[in-house]
Image 1 (cartoon, rainbow, N blue to C red):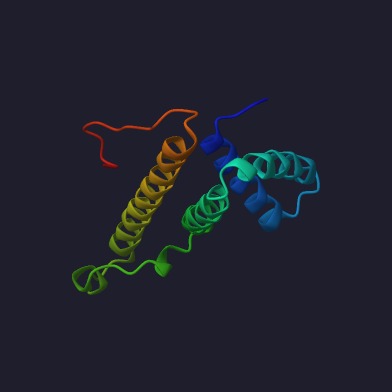
Image 2 (spheres, rainbow, N blue to C red):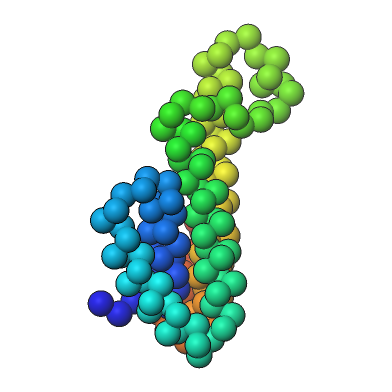
Length: 136
């Protein structure tokens, strides 16, 4: 299946990340297929290699935030001094969840900006445009 270039880079970076993080052997073929197609498209647009690297780093950031939330590692997120002085751990946990959600939203905004840049560079796919949306 032929994907728009932005989607291909995003899917490839996520699949590679999954392979690295989980070691699932069934991902090898998927990653190989994506990277082969990416190498073909990079010949025409060498800048795509940097976009791939950027998307991999952004998706790694998102993976970390979501993993921390799933594993209950909420204390890794710094809250304001006022919240640090709060006497209940519940308040701190809720603040940490909110901060993690904001970090995920901001990382996704960077991800969409990169993917929109790919659409401009290559001319395939479509831009993701948000209007009156919290992520903008």
